[in-house]
Length: 369
Image 1 (cartoon, rainbow, N blue to C red):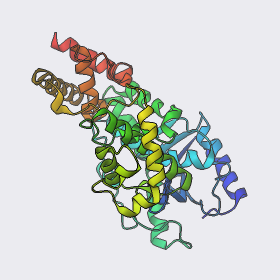
Image 2: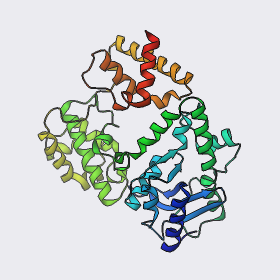
Image 3: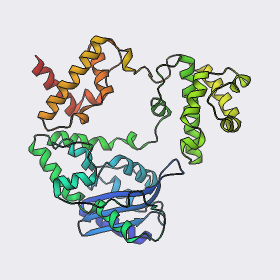
Image 4: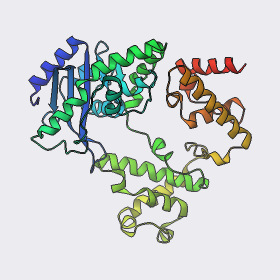
């Protein structure tokens, strides 16, 4: 267990000299907006494994240089959340990432496999998962916690090599390299924008003023939760946000008539709700994220084309050793078909029109002709 700055900086120097490092994190996330980092696992080889006490060393001195080093490969499984946490603690943006979960999707396997299932399938290694919900802030760690944490990085370099070889053998080596370069995008490690949180709500059936009020309430809650480092639901529950938006009260007196709104919530946040109402009333039309994603609003012909396109993409991807889920979501394919058919002027997601996905879709078009 590394507990001093000198020990961590020495390990980080060795990691950069080695040129590749397996990384994982263990955290506690129940009463805060941001995960509370407890342990960072760092592995150079199967027998050169270390646990960093992130409670004793919250800024992780030296690790930022490892993350940002373009000459050091960072090997993780399901990398985004771990890297978001590490970027926040170190202030450094990751470079040269290899995500074994995403790589599996280009190696003839599912892109949603857990690390345990992937290791069993590819390396015949069985991991014990008894410590998944441990309190990683407690000290000392139990022997079971230590072994669990070390096992999460022990086999990552070997798994990386295996998946890279499989993907290359299937002709997906270039696609794999492109997919890993996507982790260089700084936007991945930024806090979610209110727009992204808002689009998780079923807002498409709300009237414009209701949508505007829901958006302003979501933005207010997001800012307050971050500032106080509290879970969103501790500030206001989703059901309360939607109840206010659906009722769309015009003033203070109307607030008391909102059905389904918890009274204690109204008491605590009455002024904030009134402020959100005032802001919502001033939002110009067309400034909200597009909430009209409900599939039942699409015409039958468009729905049929979307289904046919999904099936064709799935068939071609599978033939290429690619998990169809890695190509794009149903929303992505829907946006593509609607644009191609002139059903909307909004362009499809950029990732479908560039790189290996664009080449795959071009192959699909060629086969169709």
